[in-house]
Length: 238
Image (cartoon, rainbow, N blue to C red; front, side):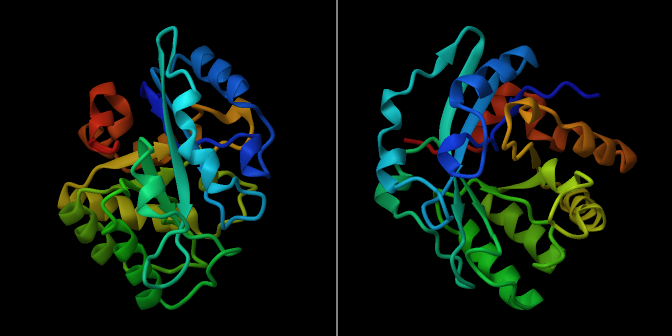
C-alpha cells in the first residue's frame, strides 16, 4: 500500500454515533505512523452531533502528540440544495478545516441537478476545503461538472474508504468513484482520502480506497495524503 501520512475524516464519541474517544483515535493514528490526524465531528444538524460551542472551544486541545500533529475541523452538513451549511462563518473561521457532506438524515436526495448544485454551492463557501463522500447513488451527481467546479474553487474531493466497505449504507460507491477519479485525472484535480472512521481501529486504514486507486493507476501526485506539506491545501488560512 502507498504510504499515506494523514487522515482528516474521523469521528469520536462527540458525534453521537461513533464509539471511540479522541485519545483512542490519537493512539491509533500514532500506531499507524500517521503524521497528521484530523478531528471532524458531525455538525449540529446531525442527530447526536455536538453544539456549536464544542467547535468554538477547540483551542483547549493540544495539537502535538510526539510526531503526530492534530488538526481540529468539522464535517458540516449541507442542509439544502443551495449548499447552506449547519454552522455559521463565526464558528467555521475558528476551525482548521471544514468538510461539507450530504446526509440523508439532513437533506433528502434530489435530482442530479439539485444534488450537484448543492455540492457546488457548498464548495463556494470559503471555509470548505473538502467535499465529503461524493459517491452515493442516492445522491446522483454530474461528476464532470463537480470536478470542474472543484478545480476552479480549489476544493479537494474525497475518496471515502468507508463508502467502499462491503457493509456501507452508501450505494454504488465503487462505480461512482471510478467516474469521479477518471474526471479528476482528466482535469488534474486532487483528491483526499478519508477513512470516515467511527471506531479507532479504522483510523488511517485506507485499504479499500488504495485498492481502487491502484486499479485505476491514479497519479500519486493528485493524492493529497501522500505529502504532509499538502495539508496547506485543505486548512483555512488565517
